[in-house]
Length: 287
Image (cartoon, rainbow, N blue to C red):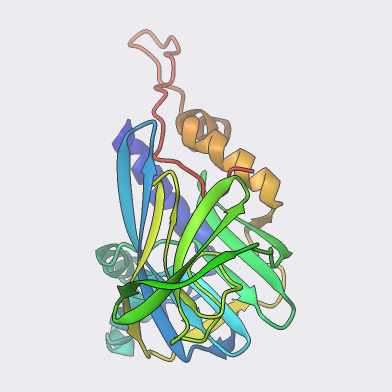
């Protein structure tokens, strides 16, 4: 059953999450470049599901531009680079073979469809996620973090001396390490508001940890939708928390309701109970 769910989700990405995706160019043609990063900070992000007692790690990146910040999968950047290096005549026309090759390249780099974009000038945030075989997004005003700063240098991360700060944010107590030698008031995820780049962050429970591993200068395009994206569902942050939790705890049932999975039956055609397999889940925000 676990493998069936994974297969269905992969198909859903192709049919829904990338409904207007151009496999020739490896991009969504509806996304518009709005900025170019002048520094990219690569992070290792670890999340632990305390119920399943399992930990998963991701390679993410913060793209810092003059007007926008984008927190996204580093694998997406690597896959885009690898795909662009393939001669264009081998990527077109857009056949099933080309699509299959793109998925092979994409899976090699463990890409993740989720991302966050911060509009610095307008002080708002766009959060896009993919779960339950659907792409969701919401917008909110850039949230405030009430930091308590310790002015003493406490650690060195990737060669930069760091001070610490703490805050309570939406149900979690966070401790972060930031360096004033990198005078950008940003960090991974939604973190911002300190007089230096946040290079490490962890919640006191130990369930979430971000650690910077490398700083690169890729001058990546920061792209976003300038109009309502097709086949994405607009939601709210509060509703997103509820629906993501429901899906993580009842993935099979939700896929049956959506018509993407048939209810299992025995040899006589009688319905069988759905296996209740919890997916790895521990949200960054609890409220």
